[in-house]
Amino acid sequence: MPLNHTEIIEDLEAHIQKAGGAAGEWWVGTAKDSRSPFFQKHLVADLGDGLVYREAFTASAATAVVDHFVRARGLHLDQEDAPEPGKIVFVFHRN
Image 1 (cartoon, rainbow, N blue to C red):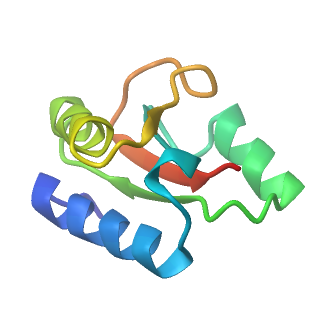
Image 2: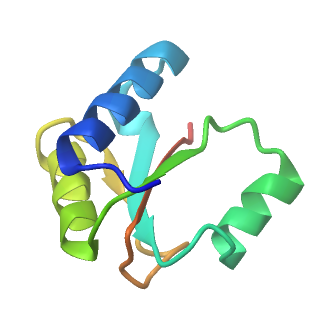
């Protein structure tokens, strides 16, 4: 179920805080859907990287969430694993 921009930020902030680690160890990005190769790789490999994602109502809302995490929180932008913008916002931990 899609969430608004504020709800996604709150959910992902809570997840990051609970999982721990410095902001610079976390990555954020968007994807078109949760069945993309990026998500399949994480599910199959069971990377233990705290991957979590939420669906926004629009791609522009998802981009606003990503901008918040990159600019205000210092997370790294992941455009390599999921290069096409979409409504799914994801975060994961990488040392």
